[in-house]
Every structure is written in C-alpha cells, then in structure tokens.
Image (tube, rainbow over the protein chains, first blue to last red):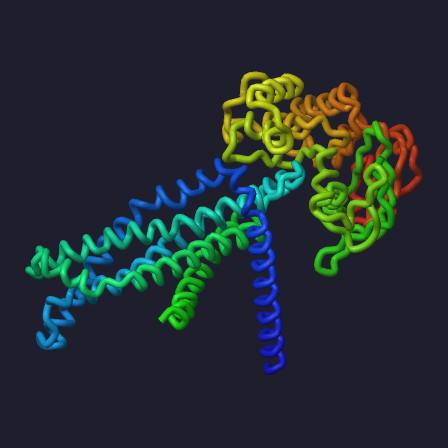
Length: 261
Length: 250
C-alpha cells in the first residue's frame, strides 16, 4: 500500500513539474511572440472584443451585486454585531477599500476565468482534436503566434479595464443600498469613500488583475493546446481550465497580498 | 525528393514505425497503403514535421528536417500542402478565408489578388461561388475539395493526402481521386497519398508502398503489387482477414 502511495505521489509530482514546464515554455513563446501583435492587430482586437466588451453585461451584474451585498453586510456588522460602536459614516470607507483591494479584482477575475479562460480551452481544444491546429502548422503558421498571443494579450489588457469598470459599478451598487435601504446620505457615503481613498489600493488591484488576466489566458491556451480525446477531452479541458484558473487566482491573490501589503 | 531513412517513431513505448526506408522522387504519385493503425498517418505527419521521430532521418530536397529549428521547418513546410482526413477547415472562417490564409500570412498580395487566387483554386476543385460559406454549411465531399484548394493555394511542390476518400460515397470518392490525378498532372506536384482503399490506390498511384509492422514491406508499381508473392500483401490487396491478429490464415 505504501509503495503504491509513493508511486502515486511520485507520478503526481512528475506530472506537476511537467505541466509547469509546458506552461513555462508556452509563456516564453508567447512573450517572444508579443511584437507580432502589431502585425496581427485584427486578431488581437477580435479577442479583446470577446474577452472585454462581450464580458461587460456579466461583469456589470456581478459588480453591482458585489457592491450591494458588501454595503449591506458592512452595515449589519456595524449596527448589529458591533452594537452601533462604529458609525455609519465609515460605511463607504470599509466597502470601498474592500472593492478596490479584493472584491473587484478577484471576483471579476473568477468570472473571466469561467467565461473567457474556459472558452479559450474549449475553442483551442476543439481545434486540436479536429486537426485545425495541425493544419495551421502545415500552412507554416505558428499556432502560438496566431492563436495564443492574441488571447494572452487580450486577457492581460482587458481584465484590468474590466476591473476599473467594476470599481465604478460596484461603488454604485453599494451607494444604492446605502442610500435607499440604509438611509445613508449621498454626501456621507461618498465623503467616507473619499476619506479612505488611496491610489495604492487601486494600484494593487490593477497589479492583481494584470497577473490574473494573463494567467487565466495562459492556462486556457496551455490546456487547449494539450487537449486530446475528442469531445470528451474538450469537455474535460474546459472544466480543467476553469478549476486551474480559479485556483491560480485565489492562490495568486494570497501571494500578491503578501507582497503588496 | 524526399528520402526517409531508418525512421523510428513510438508513443509511450509503443513502437509505431520501427524502421522505415522510403524514397519519393520529384513528380511521383505514391500511395502508402496498410491496415488501420499501422502508422500511415504518423509517417505522413512526420514528413511535414508534425511528429518528431525517435530516430532516423527525413530529407526534403536534401535538407534534413528532423533536427531543424521551427523557423527552418516553417520554410520547408511552405513547399508542402496537406489535405487532412477530416479536411480540418478552420470553422470560424469562411471558405475564402480558409483558402486564402496562407497567402495572407506569407505573401504581400493585395486582398483583391488573394480573392482572385482563391477563386482560381475553387474552380480547379469544381466549387466556384462558395467563397462566403462557412465549413459547417458544406458536405463532407465539399469540405475535402475546399481542403484540397487550401493545400494547393501556395503552389506547393509536394501535396500530402491523408485518407482523402474516407467517409465519402463511391461517386464522391471517385471524384476526389480524379481531382488528385488531375492536380498531380496539371501542377506537376509530388503526391503522397495515404489510404487503405485499394481502388483509390490503383487509380492514383504511379507507385504503391505497403506499410506493415512498422516497416515498408513492399514498394513498386500498381501492376507489381497484384503479382506480389508476399502473403500479407496478397491478403491486403484481396481484402482477406489475415492481417487481423487471431485470424491468421495460412
């Protein structure tokens, strides 16, 4: 039994490092291929439209309710658990800091992991199992340059933009709840937001979103390129891309929090 | 000329090709036959560098491709066109975009010139006027013909055909065979066709090579394969069950 455990552990360790090696090589090939985006600007714009503009409705819904629920929960903590010791004058500060540092970067990244990362894996996986990627190779077109670089650049650049958009919408959601349901005046809410406002909070959130956006696209591309086993394989690749991207975002969030704060 | 020497390819310790020696002269129309899973497609893919061999060499016009870097390999691939078994058309693109992609990527031709060349190739394969269609709107036979037009668009020296008639009805299969013969003659290309369809092989081939147990066990003109004394060749040509393990005939 112990032998099989060690065998299993050894196999998993080797598989992990092989996977990391594959992803690292792909990242290297993408990075050296980035100058091609000027030539392939039409491909990049298409992916930016898909990853960014087409994600706006979903990001809007997620952000407005994230802001709303965080305002409601913050008020509950202040009034209920803390017995009113903390004034509602601080509601905007608490909610705003949470939105800038954690809520918008992480939740929007997870939404994008589901919508964009998984779709990249499914699209490239389908291309792999139907020999379309081999056809690109046969036409002397580098699939990394043609398929992965535009998706990576789109993920890397559009997620920070979506996060900035999410900052605004989430604050709007929080304000609506604070003003109409909790009777916090507009000047009190936004005055509180302004008092705690720090450009470093926005910077840290954007740093996270750059990392999460690039990472999500990279994971989607890597898993898509390695897909095998027909329709079943594409299904597995899609799930794997979402699970790995989500884990990457949550672990990465912790690591970046340690570095940035 | 393509020269394959001592080629060995395995996947996860399963040896698919153990020792392949094959020479394909310029202008040849060679058909590689063999049972399902014998490694015909693997051999075809290795010729264009889609699969790296474990050992052996592949020379294309004297240049050894198995150890080439990607840049040089891409230069060599521009000499090739390939028709995949399922056509492998890019399903997000129209027929025109599919066929014209290589020209757009590798030449400075204007959009009008590319469109003109695409129309020419569509005429060659007998499908004028379908430029704006998506692959999902095409039948299996049309996909293969569009795939052939895409393979021919760069006026290649060598065209590789992976099971070109598989999955087609006999009439369409015959039409594809005639297209292969016609394009071979008209454009003076070297055709390398992989199939297990003997009627296709007899129609298309100047020379037939048979792959079995990871080796080329027969190579010669179609007239010679019919007279071969090798049991395995005879069984394959006649379509008897001797190749299947457990059904070994005397």
